[in-house]
Length: 73
Image (cartoon, rainbow, N blue to C red):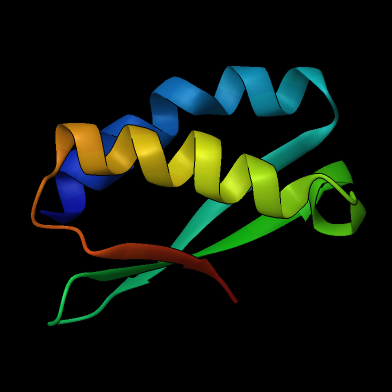
C-alpha cells in the first residue's frame, strides 16, 4: 500500500511545488490512515486543509481504496 500512496503523492507533487509547497508521507497506520506533512508554502497556507481533503485525500482514495483518511501531522 505504501508504494501506491507514494505513487499518488509523486503525481501530485509538481502541482504543489509549482505553488512553493510539497507533501511528505510520514506513516500509514494499520487501520488505513495516511499521515502526511505539508511542507513549504503549503504548511502555512489557509487553503491547506482544502488541498489536503479535496486534493490529496480524494486522489489517494481513488487509487488506493483501502485508505480510510488522510491527515496532516
